[in-house]
Image (cartoon, rainbow, N blue to C red; front, side, top):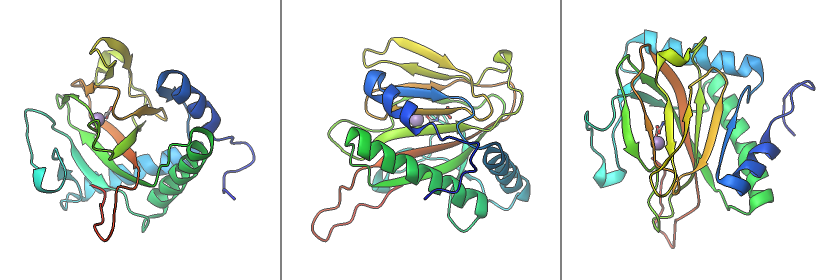
Length: 217
Ligand code: OGA
Ligand code: MN
């Protein structure tokens, strides 16, 4: 079914185990090397194009959408299957979705994701990706595309538990994938000394009812 070469075993089962035990997972070298490389190159290409490919990120969905420089300062671009590297990523995540649904009965229905570029000094203040009861984003993912990232470069993803106690500082290292339950973990992005590159994404359940659709983003 999937197109990975025989040397690469996707870490889907480890992610399922981690999610069921503690609600989040941190996986290094999560993708085949060439896939990570092509995504990193694609993001750099979009940034260099300098044609408004990358947009100032907002907060909130639909009518609630707004831009707020005090909350987040990254530039983003949503991934689309029209590009080869982007398509490979969306297919990989679709396979993860199928695996997690089979193992954990999460009922994940769709996946949306965007490239993100944080300039030096840019941050994203502590937030939750979803709010309880609003059954929208169920699972958050972040893949990091930063070559040779040093601890001293900063830019950590800081994870908190439901009581807002710090649980882990995660370095945005090249090829590292973080997956966590969107409603349970407040988190923030610390400012970095360098440009910081990633792909953030969310699995959603289907909250459409009757003829009222509930589009992602
Ligand atoms: C987000 C987010 C974390 C990161 O985009 O919602 O929290 O480490 N990103 O980039
Ligand atoms: Mn977030």
